[in-house]
Length: 368
Ligand code: SF4
Image (tube, rainbow, N blue to C red; front, side, top):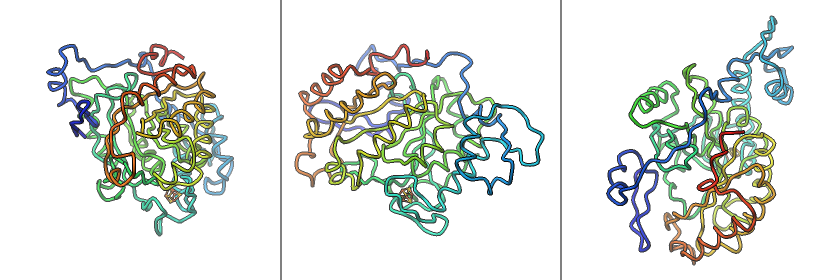
């Protein structure tokens, strides 16, 4: 966090925290931390789930996954005096822990038992996360956010600005109590926090659920799920019941570029699967597009065309802060910032496809 890059066309700040406010104010006297909050009385989905009981009809581990997911989604929040009555949230947590014994959370679909090894992401059953920190430059409707990053990733983007977090042990093992102690200290600062954001969640969704299982009962900020679009139905089934705002990245518009630059197969299949799952969820969705230099025609425009099929449900967020990091210098064309023209072609395409840009069309975000 708080990394600053000096590029020929300006200064780029990565994950700025409150300590950067004096710096931004010195650059622009009109600078303000922008924020559009949900109305009073907002209750995050996971808190509703924690109040809800379901009757399994038999032991939890004898129920099949579909039976439990259907009950989590549909059973009204009523108490049922039954020996097999359980909290819906606990059932979901159990499902997430069971999923990693034959892991197919991401498009690699390794099918490995993460209690006894790792798949392509390199993560065992244990998750690791950064200390939560305050981010003051997210999209206005979720800003400022308390952010925590999970380590390990199933995508290996050659230009990844956060490639150091691929190594699981770069962060400490997830300890929910420590997470909430840190979060509480951030919430009581002068910065009014808008959301809590979990990033890099696909491979570590059971870690997210574990953290939420220990949340204070009066915690009422929206949960933002920041994820690459290489998840599977197994991931979305577990993540949907606890997600208030989806924040996916779409990086490519074809499988070849995804294979060459991120080492993944069938990227477009999984991207569409993820977008469909989010639309079906009927939650709030902001799709981010990082403008990759040299990939406007092959990736950005086709990605926007794809998103136009979801334009009634989604917002888009155009990110122009790409800087060549990691191994970008080895890839012809990627070792530079996107040009102003490339960025403006992408912004124009947002209008051409009739998409809602969250930076300018955001007043209705919390009103549906
Ligand atoms: S998260 Fe993806 S890469 Fe990791 S073990 Fe599961 S299927 Fe494999």
